[in-house]
Length: 167
Image (cartoon, rainbow, N blue to C red; front, side):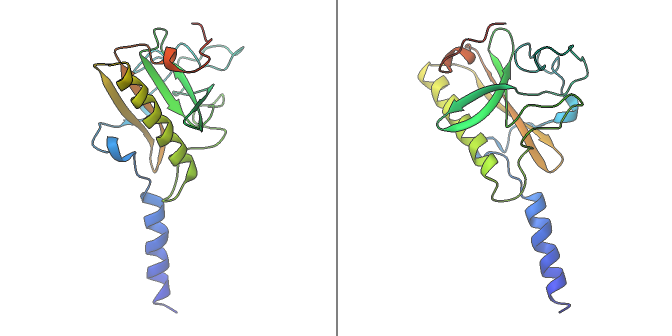
């Protein structure tokens, strides 16, 4: 009986801390979600603030524009020029990092797979357009991946099907 306690504890802890960042970007410098806002490190003018609500300068980075890439349904926000997007799983609510679907957590989280499929699709589109700069920056919240910034030298937003979002 007592032999099961350490094993159970070990399995539980490994599931909690094994929230791996996308394999291709594990060596990238990470940003804590708590060091982001809609204004920094990038000014996300589209999709960060919910429509109709007053802009809050302390609002954590959020994503609210729906996007379907490679069958992966995610949300994004972007800078006015579209060269930086923040890719996430849900729309943050008024008080910061309360997401409609939450971040990714644990070893076999299908939300993480969806986010990774979207990143792979966007990076592939950027390569096809011969972008000379493609940077993917993981955004973390303690034990979960909150989202990713994708930075390029071309307008990423215009690569998305049905991009009718205007700044």
